Length: 126
Image 1 (cartoon, rainbow, N blue to C red):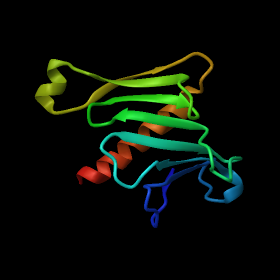
Image 2 (tube, rainbow, N blue to C red):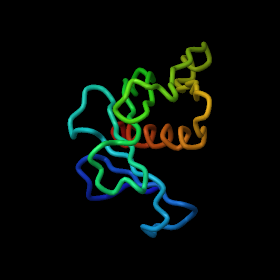
Image 3 (cartoon, rainbow, N blue to C red):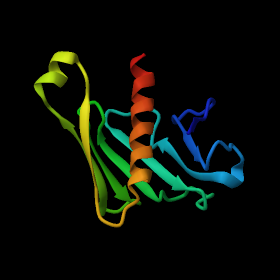
Image 4 (cartoon, helix red, strand yellow):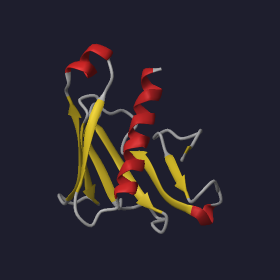
């Protein structure tokens, strides 16, 4: 996973293996707008070079650790992320969240999206 350095929309690109060759691009993720009060990101598979319509969308509030993952611009939810509250998390100041991946959805793909969300918001708080 690589963050595009000169991108206004916090664009991330995910490649096969250690490659950065365009032929090994798997998907890219970008914010839907530069300024956001809530998390909203578009995911484009490598074959979607026009990027007119996203293949997947992430909506919610990362700061509340409540995000849903949708198929394109539809209401078809494919996964969701929720914050887990435990005494040790609160005392140690750590975040733990659960991710529910719906049937027939690639859980590694969703895990990669969660990592990207975390990296984007970690950069903001550094």
